[in-house]
Amino acid sequence: MSGIFKNIYLSSRFFVLLSTLILWFCTAFFVNGMFLPGIYLLIIFSAFTLLDFTWLFSKKVLIQGNRIVPHMLSLSDDNQVEIMLRNLSSRFWHVDIVDELPEQLQVRDFRMMIELLPFGNEKVSYKIRPLSRGVYAFGLLNIFAMSKLKLVKRRVQLPLEQEVKVYPSIVQMKKFELYTISKIARVHGIKKMRRIGLSYEFEQIKSYVRGDDVRQINWKSTGRNQQLMINQFEDEKSQPIYNIIDKSRIMLMPFNGLSLLDYAINSSLVISNVALKKYDKAGLVTFSDKIGAVIKADRKHGQLQSILEALYNQKERDLEANYELLYYGVRNLIKTRSLIFLYTNFESIYGLKRVLPVLRNINKQHLLIVVFFENSELQEISRRKAMDLKGVYTQILAEQAINDKMAMAQELNNLGIQTILTRPEDLSLNTINKYLEIKSRGMI
Image 1: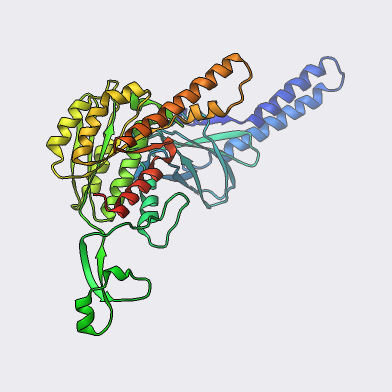
Image 2: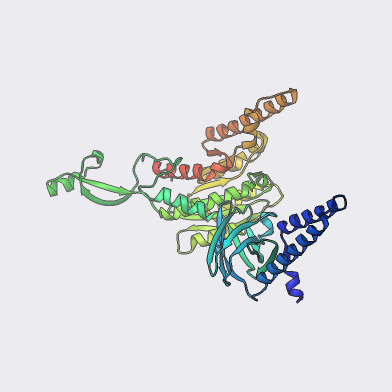
């Protein structure tokens, strides 16, 4: 019996009607003839409340349901969660759904309202956007059922506790895989690179067709076959591609709820997947004050899964990055010339100059691309109209910081180090474009 009372809730309609009755009786003290009708109204109200209670608790099991969550959630993307409900009674119900969401989402006002027909099934869905990696725990699914009277609610708790891991953005990885691998797919921002120069990976000799490069005519084969034949080459494969991620203090800065480290992790997964689909080798190195995860570049079965698990387990470190240790690690871990994407950030020209000798030494042995970030909030401040002297000073400082970033990129380019200076939200797109450009130019 105590279990029944624990699941009884009174609706807002109940309290509105009860308040109206109280106001009626208060008025009856001053107006003759209102007291007796008030008694009748109270009896009617009590009868309907009792009837509503009887309808709600006449069956032991009222509603069954299930929550369907993807087996892994994607960081910073909208992930769909579905709830399936089944009415086990012959009555119509108004239903409030309150799902116990993971604490990382910080959602305290989740509520969905649906209607359940007699013996009917209903499916509803909602989306969640996780902003941190880790294990997310869903709790009970709370169902509050009401009849057409909507005076009393019956709570039905479904024990659907489950834990789901939030991995780096699987959605972005699949999206950019389609856009870069498919010959017909196009997306705004993905550049179609014109191939410059030739690869040395010979594929076949084929008949000449209009539009082929006449410089590739194979004259010996042409003489034997009595028709124009050309040499056909394919892109070089099995080139090592490394993503090196700085996970030090400088990468803790958040933009749109996501840290720079998580932006770099998402982009690294995208590039690794694209590289493997293009038959290159993908590898990973993380560092801060010490070397973290190391996965040697390879294209074996399960390589992408290994990279995904390593990226999932990365944690920020509130310390300065040790670039001298990084150089020592690169020399010992990466033996062949490779394409290296180094995800880091510089907030001052002094910070860049301090690590510049290390970057130049790495660039001598490999093709280094330094990826660092624009401060999108400073961009907004610089475009904002200044209303007072403080606003003018703030705008000047913001513009100076933006110009410093551009000067840092120019400094690296002047030294022969390729750079990507990008907004955090455009990181994956700009990194893919740079990778496609490097491939098209045959630079590695």
